[in-house]
Image (tube, rainbow, N blue to C red; front, top):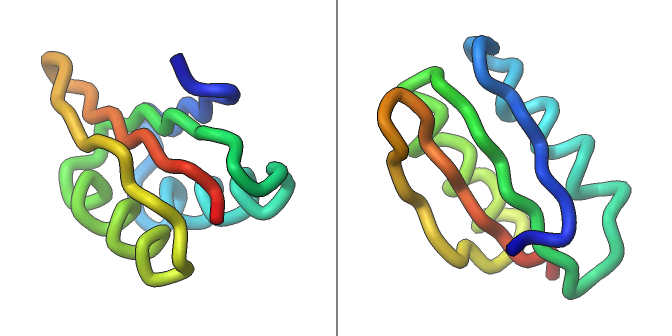
Amino acid sequence: MADEVLDVTGLTCPGPLVESKKKIKRMEAGTTLEIRGTHAPSKKEVPEMLADQGHEILSVTQEGDVWVVTVRKA
């Protein structure tokens, strides 16, 4: 289970990107974040943005209408 959870369900771009970036910035290195959303393009964009920032993408899964990205802060 992740150290923290960010729920961005119902938000559309750029909401999930902005909120994910703000949340991970406040976290300590080595901690994990689970991001849950429903905006389909963000399932690809959020992990790409986080990986570009050097964070480790642990998983990207789909649970019905909700995608889940789990990431470890660099």
